Length: 278
Ligand code: KIV
Image (cartoon, rainbow, N blue to C red; front, side):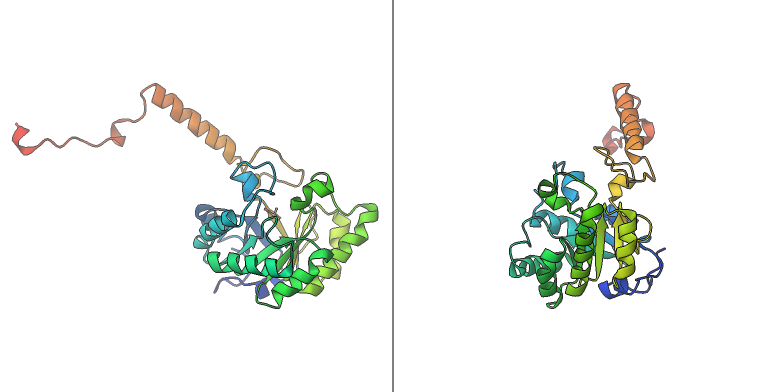
């Protein structure tokens, strides 16, 4: 059971109020069955645009569309009774202008029922974050490594070493001042994320950013061993469901080929028409 009140669904002010309290627990979810598994244990179910890579086999998150986020967002919201859904704004849906961001954020919230969105970017997105938060759109910001900028960054790199550190601190301050209710720090060095967590009055949620953040997030398929295309250093596998599924499918295939499945107990007895009964 998570530390946030169990009496009603979690909302953005509850997350904000958790600054400096028990760590926030966040996992991604993309479907109703996984949302049902996540709900009793987590504060937030993040419908990340990682769905593009994890469930749709895309090479990056850049091809993810509003329609995909709405479909998966609805599916997740149906599976939650307490944890809060946060929907990622996909690449190209918010960067052009605050107005474009508002139109798409409002659509994500209205069409999924989720009470908050997440978008990537620090100081350069502050105007947009302020525009959204003043108009009823709670925003979780995402700084450090921002995967939608993989081509600009030149890879999925650690962000914030040496000369980059002050820029990350500035990003953190800017999203807080703009009204974000929390901020994801991705692949930020441990000491820097500790410093940012100390400076900010909103919770930091780390992924590959060390233990000092106010919360942690992982991609659920990574930690369950279901997504095995690549494994960043920050992923800890809590289960090997991919291996278990492989063994189960191999056993099924072998039994079908050997006519060992289905057995008698998996079939239905014939009922003879009355006239044919002896
Ligand atoms: O898309 C995603 O899953 C994310 C998390 C990894 C933070 O943004």
